[in-house]
Image (cartoon, rainbow, N blue to C red; front, side, top):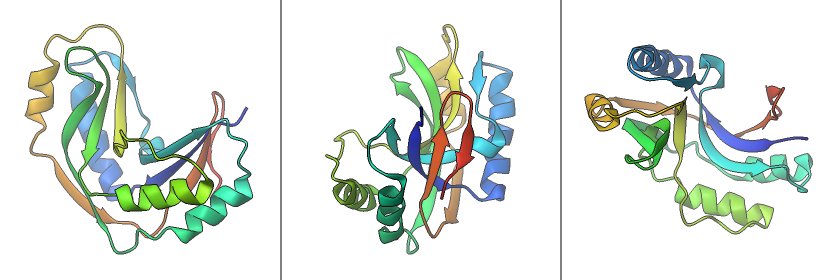
Length: 163
């Protein structure tokens, strides 16, 4: 089974900085941290889709992100501070126009809760001090440019770039 998703790849310099953050978080939190080579901005999760890979790639090629400076600022949690399950780096650049265009091109209804992010950790167990941990990283501010979207497979055994 393929689990496909569209992402914005991160430059090595950004991955290096986020890996440093992950190392610091590991001292305070119990969870599964994302490997450096798998760090990316989640843009659109397709899952096990009936849309052909060729159609997805064609749609991806039609979406331009080349004029955007992607900004990352601070950390956040999903679903909430009271029940944190995922810690992520927050993408503050408005990507809704590109997201809506991609969804429309693929014949999908855009989700109202579109929230581009970089997953850093899937938490295990309870973390009572999550708010103070998140607050400690409020000063993270990273920016970069990327020219295109990418397509990945991330089924339960394989993680690789398709396009």
